[in-house]
Image 1: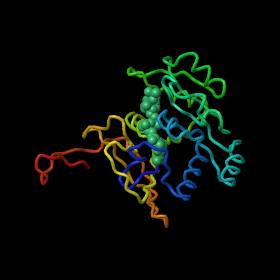
Image 2 (image 1 turned 180 degrees about the horizontal axis):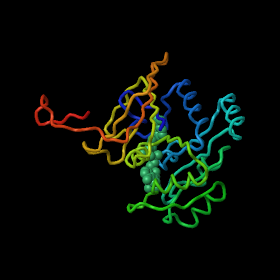
Image 3 (image 1 turned 120 degrees about the vertical axis):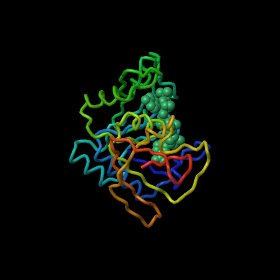
Length: 241
Ligand SMILES: NC(=O)c1ccc[n+]([C@@H]2O[C@H](COP(=O)([O-])OP(=O)(O)OC[C@H]3O[C@@H](n4cnc5c(N)ncnc54)[C@H](OP(=O)(O)O)[C@@H]3O)[C@@H](O)[C@H]2O)c1
């Protein structure tokens, strides 16, 4: 997973605007991660709000990727269980020099599937009981296409699903020197959230401060959960370790 957040963990304002909060150095680091990845994946919310072709714009990084792997950009993957977005207006689909794959479910109407299939690849995968794309099935479909390094770029809903299933190995987080605030402002990990017994535990790999005021953080995601115990000093409370 690679994300840029404000100091308070938000990825956009409560207005859900299309905003970029990372610096040029953040962009460069993101493109180096894209260079390493076979594919980059986003959820429908990010597709609709940001509509971003997930490209490598730095000519040197793109050329290096092309020399090493035969293509300047990784496969661009988006998830939408019903394809209920503005397919005709999506730049991600229509103005994207990278190869594009949309993962969906049987719930997507045939007309919407055909509209996406006219400009990108569409693959129907299993749905979860609540009708979303089953992420294990999605990752199996990607693995069958030779994807072994998958870069997850949000948003918070998809990030939660992937963490919940133990499908995230590493987190690269750019902590940006801003406060966005707001109880309804999207954060790096949204979804339902974890109960105290299911809090995910991370191990710090590196911290790199930068002149921009950003901190570039790299964590490994542990398979074991954080441990929880009654607090001796915080009456009635818990300590997560
Ligand atoms: N600062 C950053 O680094 C950064 C990066 C990315 C995004 N963002 C921001 O994040 C916001 C979007 O986040 P979001 O949480 O609303 O949307 P999201 O995580 O991008 O997409 C979630 C949507 O994906 C679809 N989906 C299908 N299967 C899913 C599954 N198993 N688990 C989760 N989602 C599944 C669902 O739509 P269906 O039910 O229709 O299938 C779901 O509503 C935008 O405001 C964007 O600007 C910021």
